[in-house]
Length: 477
Image (tube, rainbow, N blue to C red):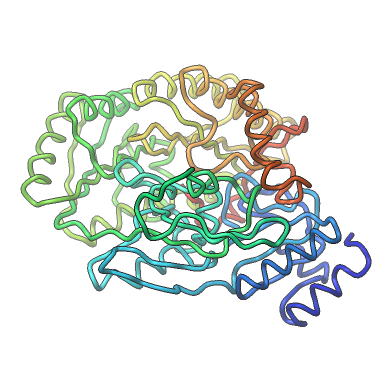
């Protein structure tokens, strides 16, 4: 519950249509892409930076928690107000402020939808590279908070590789600009520090991003395998040949059948695994790399090597991939999706381990992931109404992430830590490193009011459970 007078101050600032406080309205903001829930006490819709700064000052005066929210498609509980307070929803700060094609950059507000930026510049031969599967729904501000990735991370990197500068509001209401249109400003890389800080240090109100030119040629390949091990070996073989596709995605047989039934994208339902590989660049180079890919796949026992013949066929294959998680709802009432990372050379043994975990707990685990950079998304299917299933799913997920750490990997590649994995941070980092992270948090947010209970361990176990009915195909991987 907010302290007396706090809501009235907010209402005077934003007007009667600038906030929500009825329980039935607040219920829409108590979750993100998970089924973990906690209701905010107030949701506020700022329209410009001055609003956000004033909201922050009021929250500081009343010592109220502040949680930023984009489109609510995140997968680690980042937008859930774990301790109540005020949710700052950026849906109305959704303008593209500037497009500068000559210098290949744009300036946007945090509520701009990811795909809308590419749509705004594509007729001029440009695009915005970060492409989470939720790009039709997720906001660029949310992408910055979580340092979102996507299928094309292998070549283009994650969000931080495309953010040049930020305008941010500190917890005391100060407005600060960091970075900018220049490619390499002197001093500490504060832009890099705050991109991926999960809303625990600042509220982002303006973002300067890099735009890229469309490639001359794009080719999409579907390589089909009789075993997941052979598909895993192929990824290592591609790397050994110094081929760098813009995307290498892997779907196992369980996922293939769910995807094909739902989307009819042309995936083989009798295969054990496929690799969806994309190449782009100069026509001659792409043709040569396609032939090298064919040889690598053949060497690793691919039963078939298909090259999409038309843009429509290519788009259909990607539609199947990007809508994969919505397809799970046709098979299982609930699922728990993980976000571990392993070195590419460890993909095959990690898949074996996931299979062992599946058999150990008697749960179906499907695999779909960014094989090119080792970012795995094992999906643990379970029935929450069946006694013990939830506990098995949680235990399975923790074992998989612990294994990822043991082979030199990480607990997250793009979903963030949030309130899903913060209790696992102590398995990944030393106490000294965690203390340094904590001190950085305190430097920006000494009262611990910005997105409290996230990122750092709290001593409370809280893992993300996912319901397909809530996803609407907006998972950001």
